[in-house]
Image 1 (cartoon, rainbow, N blue to C red):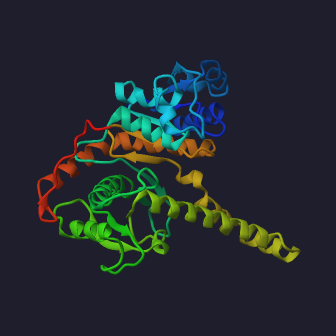
Image 2 (cartoon, rainbow, N blue to C red):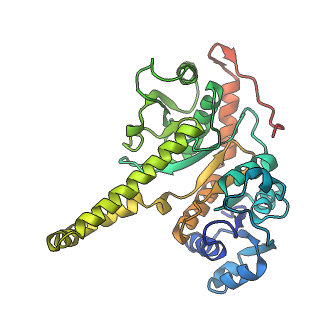
Image 3 (cartoon, rainbow, N blue to C red):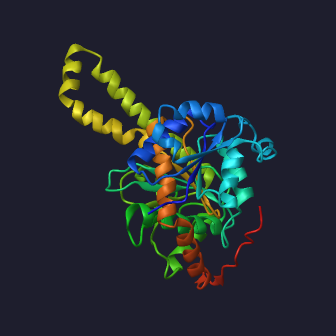
Length: 355
């Protein structure tokens, strides 16, 4: 099966062109059906392609030497959406020149450009940033929102649950992924009014492709007991950073422990297979590729510090969402939501032309 080509913002990320091209090349070695639109400085891209000859025939270059800065305000970046590598990569999706866009650049700018160019899907008020996190279970957990929306009402949380469940069905293969709302306790009386309202609406809903299991506390996110964790972007971003920080703490603690004495070093040699497995499981590059859900197009955010393997994973995420028709799945689920009474009232469709 030939997939639509993927637009790569070759200038984004901490190391820019070299890592982005190396990551795309690695993704193509794993799946030779990938095609790319490489957006960025043509001279630098061609130089990077010299070490990946197989990429040349699979790629087209769109020259652009303007780059969105890592600390640049989204409002400033928006003014240069038609001249920057990030903006042109997203616009390629809008024009149909690419099926998806991948960037490791400024997250706020990428969200702003993507929302302006692609607009939200019918029935979706706000897009959400979703990512895969490791668990003790058989599959990763999807968590959203991770920073796109600081404040969310019950309606937003319900829409996030539907979008996250559609994504999870692709990742886990479950017909009805287990969905929970992040809260300070699992009891129905805990949390804000919006959380309780969203919970009530999801409990009353019928025919949605999910299994809603109520509230979840943060210490259960990675236990493998849930497929989708739904929250507002403020709480989600804090939870994500706490999880990432804990993972680094554990790996550094083990490293210090195993190098503290000769006896410890011998113990490390004995337990090395287990520690290498742990390191692989906690490595963010192996779970790289956050997705802006709710837009009329696929946009994947790679971590700015991702290595080539991480970029390759982000490209693979974009390809899988195209192949498994994520946009169509969400649209179908929103239609199902529209056709039923939710919380006693029909849910009006959002204006997809709103920025």
